[in-house]
Image (cartoon, rainbow, N blue to C red; front, side):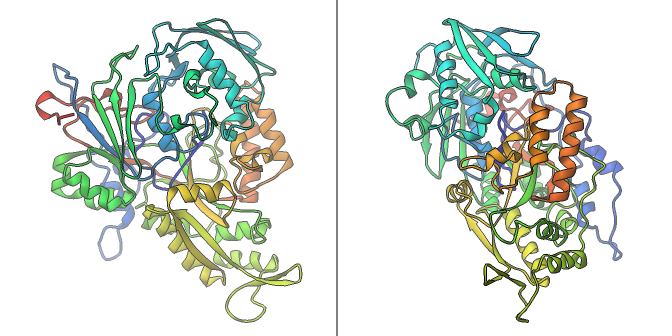
Length: 576
């Protein structure tokens, strides 16, 4: 439900992160129909190499006559979540892990995107979009054996709306949820104070925690269950070794269809190259790979013999955020100058091998809320320099660095560019930005931080500029990222962007159930964001992942890969 942030290179988040809707191009279509340019010397350009690398991706699933259960899957993430508390976690890595351990009242089908029963076996909706009644299954138990009941749902709602709980990113979706009551142990009724176009989805997918675990007098935000979660889903928590791995075991008492794989080990390996070496040696079965690795290293016979390659649209975009609390970036002209001094075309070509698109706004590029008629601001160093001059940032002392008098003091245009350590893509973007801005008289200091320290700086608004990516839900509400109320401590408007018309458009859209009318509001929203440039919007590249050929029935759904499909023939299984 909530938007989740990730490092610029998203490690494969199987069974959790949303991806593009059907109708987008397959790898083979991209490789055969998109135009390619060959360099004058006859060598292939990066873009042509990128398109050629898609040939042979997404092989047809291998399905045997006899499907066997068992075996272990080892997958790699390039960052480790801070917590696995379903209410306070904010990153896509935690969401991916929790999706295997905890269920919601209903969830979307991974192909049709329609909602299907999960913890609730049925539901009724009122005509006025204000009341939703869910009838719970009676055969669901938490992993410690305690029954799941309506009391858990009510307790979770109470914690979400408790302002002492560190859950501001999810709380905003429930600001108009008036009450959650239980006529009996297996019925819950959600009553909304006013219509909200995501009210059903918010009710059906509200994260649920076990009351009997958390309601023990300990602080909710730091409760030990954030490190040793007790869920009700298809996998149960076994062990978490910090900075090493997290182990899940299949829940043999699961109420639904059990997955085939009995153990999943998620290893935390920040370095992309080290992870690929581990995969090559057989220590990792599946992982997301940088496009540079996809184009180059994955062309070797050794890796191609061991792994199948998968590429698909992913619902996320990367960006550079400019903290408007800083004197440089409070001026719209400076933010626009930063965008026009960022050579996104060169970054897309050199780092992403031409795979992906430059985006212009916060909505998924293939959604109807996106505005394809808005074109990216061009790379224009001359115009960028002019805008900086106009904003008063000139080189007054002829030392090669722009400066400006602010409150009687001379301030040099020098700022820190923050990114997560281990993200080679973010680092390369930073180096290119550093080089371009130096030509314009602006000094950029690269600051890479370990993931937990990075998140702390982000939450405290202790940064100048940052690069990240937002993972997007199917139906998008920009309130969490862009409403001015989310500037406050704990909100997700990290760059402190405030615009009264934007706030009004967001609020109007929340109560508009007609998609066409709601998208009209969003298109005006997109125009404002494009003009104001609180972000330099970067790219929506495809997901690129590898899966060891031992695993069969690997299907590319509308929402990407799902380990629940996979199995390993008995003769190929590794011991548990």
